[in-house]
Image (cartoon, rainbow, N blue to C red; front, top):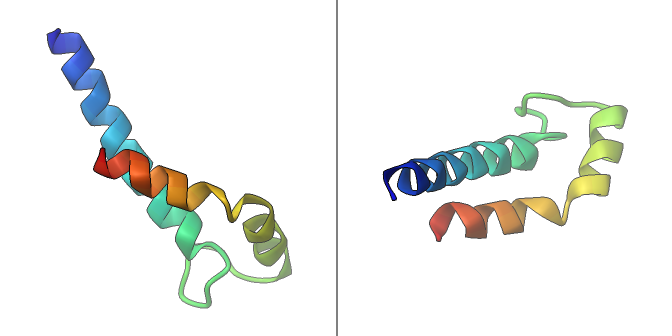
Length: 57
């Protein structure tokens, strides 16, 4: 049970990190900007809401 709780904690933490980074991709103050970042962002734009939901559950 302890390992399961630990794993769930990592999933929650990492989901939040991934959601934050993907949300900032393509933004002028983000971690990646430019045409390639914009195209990438458009291809993964449905993912951040799911990651946000996972990080809060």
